[in-house]
Image 1 (cartoon, rainbow, N blue to C red):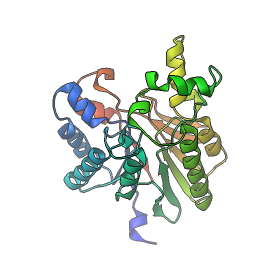
Image 2: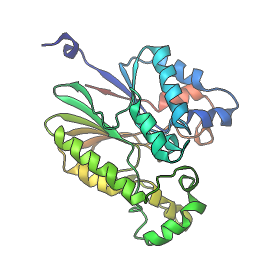
Image 3: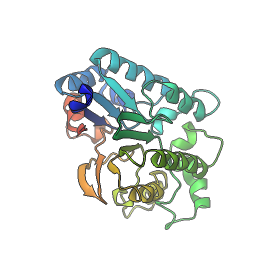
Length: 276
């Protein structure tokens, strides 16, 4: 047996760190706080589930700095904030992130012959709001409700983006159906994690939270041990045996949502660990 696989691999997980926004909110650079938090824990790989910053280039710079300062590998999938367009379309941002060594996009990370991490950004198809209003109304209202309409430009419908990525997930899950899978996607794959309220505008915004088509796909894969996501800033932590899987959703979120203004402590509270 390979000595490397005689030893456990410990994966630290984080999502929705929003490092640049939180630095602005706290009026100081919070990267040192993130670094201090990482230096307090024992891990082999840091797995980030999107929304590291508001720019693909900034996110890449942060990933590079984390790897340089800690000596540990980072694996990453983008969220909607990371693909804010810097050139003609958001595909430029997506592809820039895809090409980085940390990216899981089209590059499942093979841990060993029995375990793999599969991940991509995901997207939304309005399904979490279609029982409230038709998609035509959602498209009309998106610009006034959701910043993606201003800053994320795909040059195609949201549903088309979602279907493209869904099909990639289907292909990769089929290719690795004989391995134990850690599945990573930024958006909400299960309706149970979508927050509904008496506020009609809020409920309309749920159109942009994800799609239960992902959850249904995952339900059909008994070899998936972990499902990781973010996008919502509600901290659920680790939920064991949810629909037969371990689900992790523990976002950092924005500083004004925190219990304290201690960034290092908030980062630590939002870390979960997977041992393989």
